[in-house]
Amino acid sequence: MYWAFQHYKELVQICEANELASRSETPPFLSETSKRIDEGPTVDWLRKTIKKFGLKGAGKKVSTVAE
Image 1 (cartoon, rainbow, N blue to C red):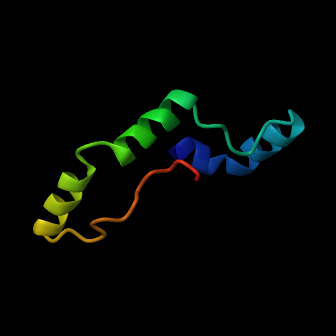
Image 2 (cartoon, rainbow, N blue to C red):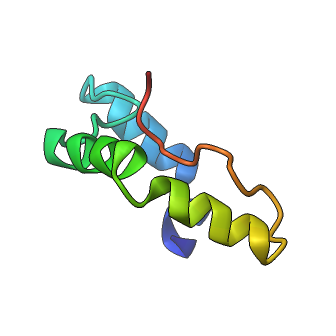
Image 3 (cartoon, helix red, strand yellow):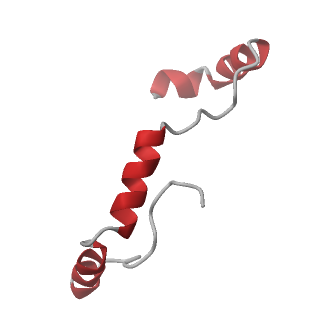
């Protein structure tokens, strides 16, 4: 990460020169797994447990899958 941060401009130029996408696609199996977790049987229990212990942001959807 540190190296990429230090060489970000170079990496952008390389990506543009090779016509690469600026953001890679999420592999389908990760998207499907995230969706199953977001809609799974333990979601309600997990949200209630987080709220019970007073953690900030409890109940917010945290999936990175675009809807």
